[in-house]
Image 1 (cartoon, rainbow, N blue to C red):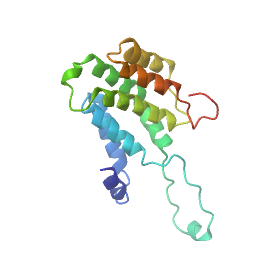
Image 2: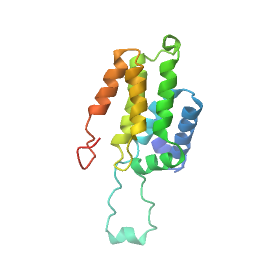
Image 3: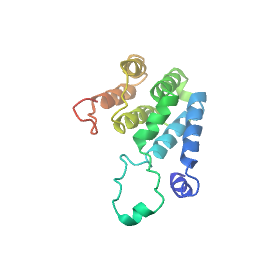
Image 4: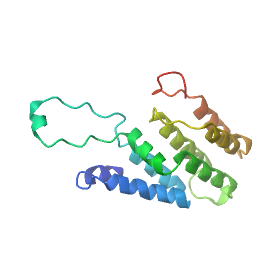
Length: 173
């Protein structure tokens, strides 16, 4: 599906944005959370991490200037200007953890947890300007450590918390 979107975007540049909005709508409504997070992360990963440097050729300057390609950081910033994606994902993780985990779906509990934490990690890693607030970390600690059902939640949370952000200019997460 992501490959199809890459090709289709050439003909309809707003196509990715439409699918991002649909995934966010699913997250807000609590529909298909796992699949929406996986899809949204895959879709966001199609954006470059940094803007390509403009070419200085004369030929290019005579043509109509091309709109600069959006970066993943820019797209995430746009999302955060509309909705606190961290708060939304943490809320859905809490809903999942308080539900009857035995009747969820064919998706394993470990995959569910890795998806929640992995999505938050993806957002943090792919942005230098966006960071988790202390309240987000507190809520994650409560959900994945204090109220943990298995050791998977605790292990994945502490793995996430102790990783160093490779994009950071210092040792901060």
